[in-house]
Image 1 (cartoon, rainbow, N blue to C red):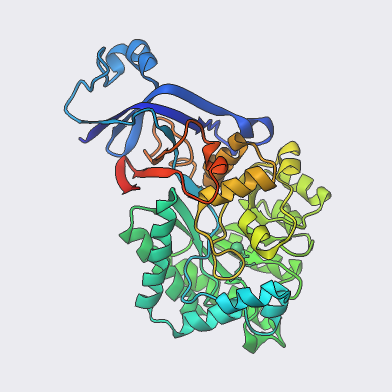
Image 2 (image 1 turned 180 degrees about the vertical axis):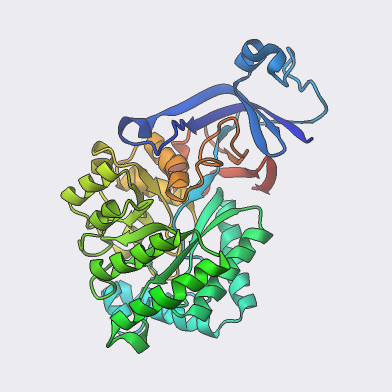
Length: 426
Ligand code: NIG
Ligand code: FE
């Protein structure tokens, strides 16, 4: 059995009480100034202040009275560095074939995002690129972005399909996501987002596309076992709440867990639909109403907020503080995609959340780890540093997690550990 002792670590971790952290709990952070972690076969078996572990656990501790491992194993001196859980990025679209820089220029000149989509560009141009790309090309581009995210401290992430929009290409994307999961140290959760845009061929008859999603695509994805979640983009000119409800109800019937791209540009009531269907999360919520946010609170839906999307679309940020006041658990994600948010950096997300959404560093840390893990059903394994969870953690520059927001424009992540193994060093 491989045993590692990490010592001299300045540990900060959210507290997992068995459900997403909401309200005041979103600010609960455990701090062990002279912290130590014992890792056995990639799993945390002891964590705390080293003196507490030695004195309170005594014979049950793998650490002797001199602070050394009793059995053979490796000791890593963290030299007082700040140690936090690996980031969980619960909303990405990194499985794509081509960037869309020219569209970014159009948006800078004032052309609205939804107008680009409605004239056949945006998501639909990514759909064209995925259809043309070989599975190998798609894999190379996806793994590149996944490994880039890892260097910024992401150790677990969600990746959506949604640039296929037909059975064959959606399955191609989901197989690619599965292969990235199998060929990197990362834990990856796959989401089927067949309802991401209406394909050009169905523009005159979107309900026929809904029928295809329900009768053919969802069952095919289920049969291949390549996605855990099903997501729908409910937006003006894309899918209505009624159409979203139909797809998500069919997904629930097949055993998928669900998420919604809700109220990103217009307040259509996506947040209320998420509450009604008890979705794991409602994502975006830039335009969500007070009333519908309160419905999410009652239903226990996680609000996954994506500040780089607001930044990049130059829209007002989602109201994180209001959501926290209303006891909605808030998670943070990159939304990394070639359109609205070309960013794989969770430190940048946290910087925007603290400085532009007025979240405290403690709330943002919980949002980017524990609540993010709950949003994708991974909190039994990751999202906080607790006995029994995976040893996924980051050593970072600075004395506190506030450094993530304080030192702007760089990544303060000095090294990344996944299941106790170092997978990145700066
Ligand atoms: O979350 N809004 C829908 N989906 C993505 C954007 C995808 C794209 O533009 O390629 C989002 O913002
Ligand atoms: Fe998205």
